[in-house]
Amino acid sequence: MSIYKQYCHEVVNKEGKLESITLDYPQNFNFGYDVVDKIAEQTPDKRALVWCNVEGEEHTFTFSDISRCSNQMANVFASAGIRRGDRVMLILKRHYEYWFAAVALHKLGAVMIPATHMLTVDDLEYRIRVSETKAIVCTAQNEVPKKILQAVEKCGQDPILWCVYPGQEGFMDISKAMETADETFRRMETLATDPMMLYFTSGTTGYPKGVIHAHTYPLAHIVTAKYWHQAEDNGLHFAVSETGWAKASWGKIYGQWLIGSAVMVYDFDNFEPKQLVNIINKYGVTSFCAPATVYRYLVRKGIPSMPTLKHATTAGEKLAPEVFRKFTEQTGLLLCEGYGQTETTLLVANFKGIDPVDGSMGKPSPFYHVQLQGKDGKPVGVGEIGELVVLPDEDKRHPGIFMGYLDNEEQYRHAWRDGVYHTGDAAYMDEQGYYWFHGRFDDIIKTGGFRVGPYEVENVLMEHPAVVECSVVGVPDRLRGQAIKAFVVTGPEYEPTKDLEMEIRDFCNRKLAEYKWIRSIEFVREMPKTISGKIKKHELRDHG
Image (cartoon, rainbow, N blue to C red; front, side, top):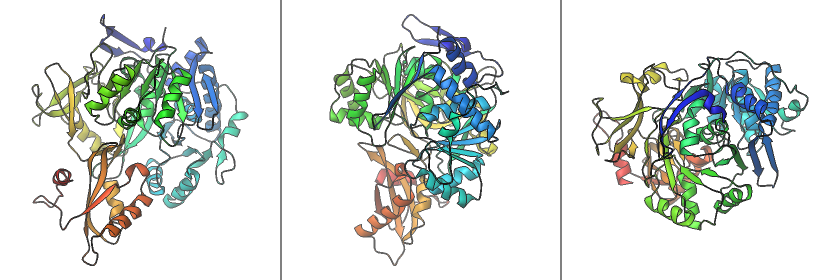
């Protein structure tokens, strides 16, 4: 029996559709002890992680391996003074050490801060400073150690620094330290309501917000893994995401392990559609999840046979109906879309037991009370556009929805105004009960599966001497869903030319993480503005 059944009660109809699900967990629930260690104790040889990289190295880790290695890493952390509530940043790409470190931090009750290797020095400095990061564990690749040292010096803090590869100046070798660490670890006192994870997510008017999740967060992903991904006990689930993003939590560890599925990890830098298919076929992947960008490339190139693959899912951005149709034609599989946020788990999806509809977000998760509301806070009718909100259950609980924004109670209260959680996303429902994404009420840009706040890009644009005023929007892009476009007003001494456009773009893109790169610039004489002086981004988007 899969271990998830110990922590929930589910009602399923004869078609396999989930009708309702409620969680039942102890006050001290901890994923490290109560899931990883428990599975290791009951079925030590059960596969947990199948890992390979572009160099041809490969490893298969059992739950016994994950339990032992996470204990060793927890002992390394503890001996360095990491305690319950301390914040530890992980920048480990798709290295297998991420899984050891994540489980170790959960066992300690420390707060994990996943971060992508694509962050710039300024991005890192901001995150380290505002989170008061106690320690960092990083990759040696992509100049990450160098960037971390510069960021640490810039913010004037002194976190403990570890790297998973030897010989990095200023960093201790955590892999070597693990070799002599004790393989056992005494259970520490933690609570299910303690903070477990801190993600940074893009905002529209300022720097990224710190989103805090509790130790109940993994349990909320049971629905994600079993009823959307349709991962299987003893199966192999492959999610493309890098570990610095929330999608890794959705598809590379929690729900999958709870239902007994191993996770497939391919450690790569440059996306190559054909290689992903090779991985699926070589290792016998049974379920697959990737952002829309991946499916667009796969469909363009033509998809070879994938005989072991039973289910495919996507999320993060809108996908053209033509891609759904071609994917099904080439694979025989229905592509199932889903929707959620960094602040939540899966809210709406084309779940097991319902007929997926191409381009639709699907139907609301039985785990949450999801509703579409108008500006008056009342439910909207069929076909009417409303904001997607979540109502708390009768006990005023909402497992899987974040417990707060870092050092910003006012922002958290605003998100939960009127007693409901506001996603900021607009959608409508058709007569069959399927939800259709309409857009953001704010100006977040979704490009290539990443969320980018315009403020982050505009801030860098304003550093160029030619830029007097600017505004950044997302415009339709065939491959990325949206591309980042900047509208720029120049100073009188600058002539808006193609050369100046290239100069500004290169200046900014050298300072921005790659997923935030400006793809095009349009010079304008003035910005369209409201009476109060705010730039009308919707007019720029329509123009762009």
